Image (tube, rainbow, N blue to C red; front, side, top):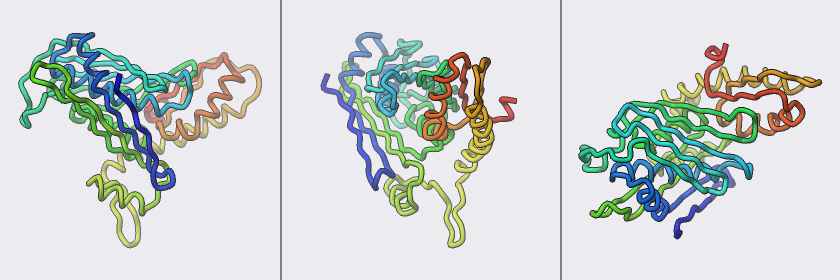
Length: 285
């Protein structure tokens, strides 16, 4: 295959970016599953995103699964990727046919309808980490942007595309993900906002406040912090423990803080089932 993924960092590691070309991958998937044009577009977008997101995982045996379930005629799709960027997937209803949307594009959002996006990360613990968000548009790129904002608290820009030939073969496919890393400076954020055309914060001379989307993120972070304290208390215990440790935390807190401790905890207490979920502490109680 002539497909490839490019990784890059900028501003002393405060910004990271992934870009991928996946024409051969998406055409192979189209042939294997005999997908309609709109199903090919949906699967191609998610396969492209999955390859880039899988390559973000650190462990050699880590696995990523993305599931989209909707009430539209396509019903949903699932992909699985590893840390090497290898990815595979399928569409629940590959034969779905719809007229173009109002912009004259393949109507992926209409084919998926209203539904849920689930990102499942298997990092070698007894239970995988699951993050869920609603489908914002069903066009996949916007839904993943929303997922990163609400679940991982990582400001991101996701773009995905599949261009079809008139004979319904794949002409081109690819995408990119650009992310601000934790601790990114004000100067970097302002510069990136200007280039992307998205406002991440509302600033004044006296303070910086979150946009409405930022307020939504805060609702997820507060209960996660309290659950982290419980996790730390469990990690400091001694002896042969059994049972289940349930932790509600954001993807960012899990990835950049909890994972090293949980791996050590799992090694010391293999009989304890660790379950990490992206919900509020009130829901867990």
